[in-house]
Image (cartoon, rainbow, N blue to C red; front, side, top):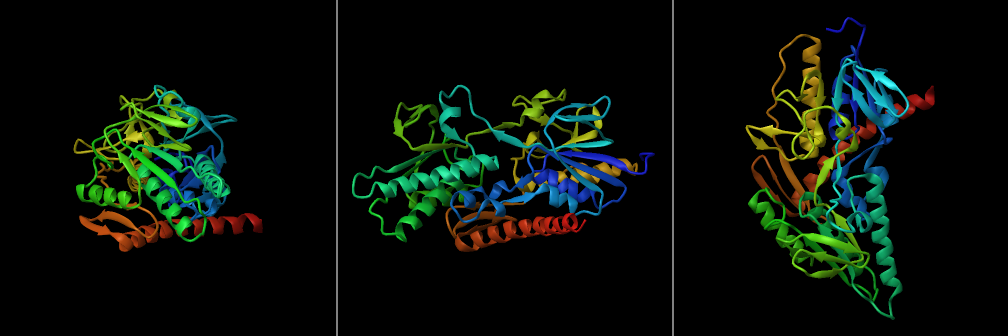
Length: 401
């Protein structure tokens, strides 16, 4: 055990895994926890489809990290700073303004959209939605595009054309939600211009690669019912402002494109002298340690996780489980107990496919339609309420001082 009065623990990254680690570690008053993030908020990426389709504003998909950390009993601090590097030998986190010492460290910086350099024009003309500011920008662009089509009433009315590249969970949910939103928008208003083309592009043979076959079939049927065009076994090779060129040679007119075709580690990971896999993500052992440093853990999307040799897809659920386990193992190190090996696996998946409709699989049971949608909404609501309640407590403490 540390001979100091308390253990200095730094958590880098306020995503799902980082937030869970902070909350778990803060329960023991022997810990002094510092959360560092370059953003002042926790972004609930699982709700991004609702943000884009105007079902939620940005205040309902984010939590202020200053007030959240203030809601604990004086043993949690938040620094809005960008971490530039880590001195593992001297146990120092180096930010853009200072050097912070730690006894234990949790790296939970997540991942970002990978704008593939080989795709000409991708970074200039496509949008990612993993970051809140990018999702907000895209939401505004989507709304302005609809508005421009309304302005065209009585003159010309070219379809609003959207390309979603990448048919994983994010791409499928966003395509479905935009199609559903536009359908409701046009049916509830008497505009002449009511044309919308959404194309979902997948390099694989199917959408939702690697997921349960029943969920894939149900999701594909829902997308087709919403009018989404699905292109499989093809990929985007180049973009210009007005169109997308596919590997098949087909040129697709577009007003804008969302790129959900892959992720890469956030920039900090590239600077760290740690073992990584071929895609640049951190590798860990069964206790979630990084290589060579038993006091350093990596969790969430910046790390690669396997269960009995099988790759575990990075999700909010998995990140939270990693956050809880690494916190338990930090406490085991502090109290000289044996470390716990992970047995992390997905506890279920719920896919939002437009307003009031979802499909899912939870504990081997398949769910469809409104009931699945309702379950997803309840889970999201409970998660937000827990964080929001804590943030409100912190806000009261700050203003009462």
